[in-house]
Amino acid sequence: MIQKLFLVLMLFALTACGMIPGNTGPQTTPIPTFTLAPRITPAPNGSQATVLGGKQSGDLFVWIYSSPNPPIRGNNTFEAYVADANGQPIKDAKVSFDVDMTNMSHGKNLVVANVTGEGLYNGNISFMMPGPWRVIVAINRSGQTNSVRFDFNVNSK
Ligand SMILES: [Cu+2]
Image 1 (cartoon, rainbow, N blue to C red):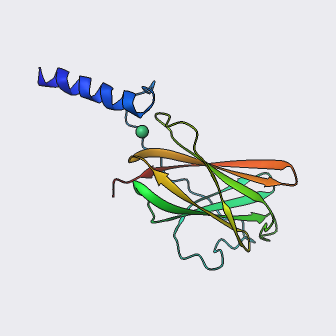
Image 2 (spheres, rainbow, N blue to C red):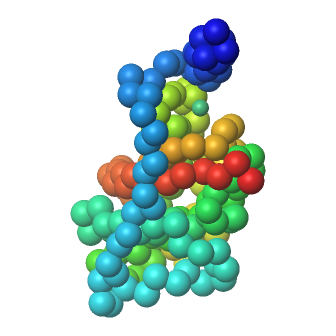
């Protein structure tokens, strides 16, 4: 009886969130690890945050930083550092963060990042609940877009 009530409550909670996920198993997505190319310097100027992950897309290298790290439910500052294959910062891109959970959808949430210079782009991201989330970083340079996806967990606090 109690179990049944719990199930109903669970369903209600999931439905309230958006949609019922196809896979209800626990989906903990590890923070991606990345082996740095020898000539790339991963430390962006001025950023004190710990790197959340780094990836390559075409001739671009992208690192994201979260403050706090790991990210928490509520407000976080995300920063992307974008460099070319020679380790030179890409300073003139348009960068956005496409934010959603990986086990359910919270709808479209696109954060346009601010250019803060020297290859850094930042934006404020609010995570509605703890659990598995992803941010797709889109980097647009003169009409061409590279997208890099980062999967990570958001803590409750
Ligand atoms: Cu959710």
